[in-house]
Structures are given as C-alpha cells and as structure tokens.
Image (cartoon, rainbow, N blue to C red; front, top):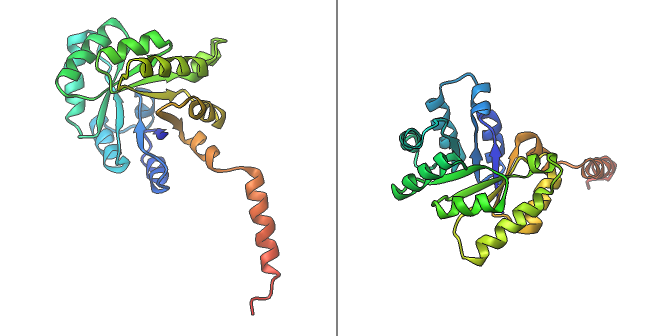
Length: 215
C-alpha cells in the first residue's frame, strides 16, 4: 500500500520522505494557505522533494474553468496530479483532462457510486474520506471495501486513496480491505512509527546495555 503525506509544509515533507516510507504527497487549499507562500512556488518545491505523485486541488467552478486550471497546475511539475471534486462539473473536467493525458484525483468521494463515476471519467485516483464518513455515523471502511469490489469486478485501473485518516486505526482499516493508497497527516504518520511500549522496551535494553562490560 502506498503512503501519501497530507501536508504542504516543506520541513515535514523532507523529514517524512527521508524515511523512505512516503510515496507521494497530497495537498489541499487549507494546507497550502497555512504556509503563507506563493501557490506555484509551493507546489514546485513540494514536487521537487516528494519524488512521487503530488495531488493539487483545482478550485474553479465551471467545468471549462476547471479544465484550464487543471492544465496550468499539471504544467508545474511532471508528478502533479490534479484533484477535482466529484460534481457534475468536476467529472466533466476530469474526462477532458484525462483525454489530454493529465492525471487526476477525484476528491470528496463518499460513496462507491461516486467512485465508479470517477473511474469512468478517467480518474487516475479516487480519494475516499474515511474520517468524514465515520463522523456521519456510517462505516468508512465499508465504503472503501465496496469501492474496491466494484473496481475489481470491472478491472478498473483507478487507484483508491483512503483519506481523512485520524489515527493509525484508519490506516489499518485501509490496509485490511486492500486499498491502493492511504494519505495521512504528519501527526498520524508519526503515530504509525512510534509506540510507547516500543520506546519503553528500547530504553530498558539501552539502560541494561550500559551496564554490560564491553571487553
């Protein structure tokens, strides 16, 4: 399963990529706005560090405007993937961009049917927000699993990205159902690596090792 980092913070991205565990980056307007840097400069810098796909969201409203914005975003770096909302306008723009060879990511997906439409429109990825689905009182893992079943039924090439992860438990759910990718905030990425029992065990043995004669 590919792991994408949800961030626009260059320091966080460099740190995560250096572990060799991150396969790409997912951004959104809120994350980019936090950095108080120019949009294009930020995207180029992220792409230069990431070494894999970098999802960047188009924010226009009409489908023609989304197509033009998507083309401009895609020109920023060869690894850029254009995120588009799964609305009628977004799906129409997705099909046109896919015809142009632009990789797209259908975002704000909450049902397997939406994911199916994204794939039929040529999406390279579709992002299912497991966290928000859970908040609605539904089971996000079930939505991901049903989407994967639909895609497998028809050999659809679109990769499923589980997003909206709130903890390593969501990452585990994604892995158990066979999601292609998971996107995680930096805090969740750190939680995936660290565990208090692991830290305690390492400290215990380091303390014991200090007492062992070395000759």
